Structures are given as structure tokens and as C-alpha cells.
Length: 353
Image (cartoon, rainbow, N blue to C red; front, side, top):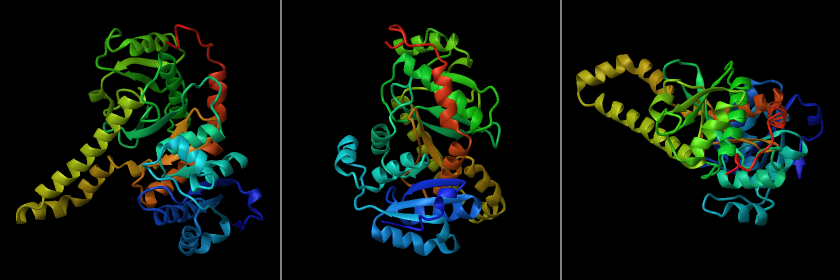
């Protein structure tokens, strides 16, 4: 079933990669694995996929083949399938097999597969960290006012509904993740809302505000969407419905800005000449809006490590996702989150409404 398994038990870093997820599978994940292996000498990987995918991956890994284990699966999960049913029925899918291997080896799974299926498989395989009712999907975003610095938002689509206690839990997890992974000291936490006043929003956000105001966090209060891209806070907390709408809007806006700029700079000879001179600066500016620079989004609240890469990820984004997974494991982020939540006050009826 597997090759190159002997000797991998001593690896400093071992990450499991699902070859079958995403729009450009299996070549983009395979090329991303090659990039990650080239960048990190301690890294060793487990690639999971069908026979054809494994052969394609092996042919592209070159000198790094000896640092890779290949595990064959016979199924894959598509975006249009019911997540829970697909995970139950397709136990030999690359996503489910990869999640199981990550759990058995205390490693992390990286996948471009469907978010719902990843969450379902994570819940069935890892379970939840004590104190987490619903895990969240988080992602870093570029701070446009301070290049090189990122702010972090959760939930961006794992759960469309959240209680006030869920939002409080996301704030605790997000603050710790921002500090440990993104390197932000005393991260400022903001509650995404329609206004900055404490009484703004619906009942859930008003209750969440009260919980966060009393928490041992650097809580900056409510924050509006127009403020977050300038780095007004370091962690943005919201439910998955709001977060996903904002995420998709940002993706669409970034793509449209690039299209408009390219179209305007190609209208005549003068604009084309200007475009030639400005090309490196424009590329750098648009690059600050590129999600591939951050690689992937962690599923936080699971009792295991899983990084979700965008479905349209190319090799660079997958490589960045693998690097993020390596950092997540090596810095023991999961253990720190578990310990932090264990120290939080117990639920009350009022908190969980």
C-alpha cells in the first residue's frame, strides 16, 4: 500500500498531503510538495491519492522522492457531494485516508478539497477540543496599511450560525493563533459588526460583546468591515455566513481591480509604455492582495491539525499551505489552544444562548 515508509519515523517534520482535492489536482499539489521539500530540508511528506495521481506526483518530485511516502486511495470527494454522507460512504477517499493518517501519526493534513468534507472528516477523526462547540475556519489577510503584517479572521465559512459563546471561543483561539503563527504581540481583537457602538448588531453580537469585554483579551470592541483592511485590529471575529460573504467579496474585488488596471494600461501606446515602466510596482501592489501568499486556512477547534488550501490553489499556494502546517505542528499550536481553552470559565446558560 505504501512505499518509502522505512526511515520516515525519524522525520523531524512530516505532513500529509491530499493529492486529489482542488481544481488543479494532482499536479498543483505535487508541484507544491516539491517546492516545500526544496525549501525545508527537515520536511518529509505522505502523499495520498489514486494510482495515477501518485505516479504523476512521483515523476515531478525528482531528487525529493526519497523523502516521500506514497499511500494509495481509490476514491475522491467532489464539491457537490453532501459532506457528511460523502465522508461516511467514501472511507477510502484521499481526504478521509489523509485525515486518518494525520491522526495516527500526530501530523497535519493539507488539502484543497471541499471545506465541508474536510470539516466532517475532521470531526469524525479528530473530534473537537474541549470547550469548542463548533470549529471555525480562519484565514490571514493582508494589512494594506502595514506591508508584511497580516490580520486574521474567523470564521470564514465553517458554520453559518454561531452563538455568543462560539464567537467568544473564536476570539480566544484567533488571538492565540495570531500571536503564535503570525507573530503579533498582544493582538487586538475586534468583533465584526454594523457599527462600533456596544449596542449595535443583533442579539448574538451584543451578547458576544459583553463576553469579550470581560475576557482576558486585548478586545478593541466592535469593528466595521471598511476598517479591517487597514489593520485597525489583528483578529476579526464573526460567524461563518458573514465571514464567507466578506471573503468572497474580497476575492472578487481583488480580481476585478487587477482586470481593470490591466485593461486601462493597454488602451493606447502611451498607457502601454507607462505599464512597462510601472510593471514591477503594479505586480508588487497586486501581490499584496494575493491569497496564495498565505497558503491556507486552518480548521481551528478540531483536536487535530488540518490546513485547507483554496480550491483554485496553484503550486505556490499549496507549498505555502504545507509550510503553514509544518509551523502549526512544530510550534505546538494545537496544544497551546487546548490549554488556553481549558483555562477559560465554564459555559453558562446565558453565554450559550
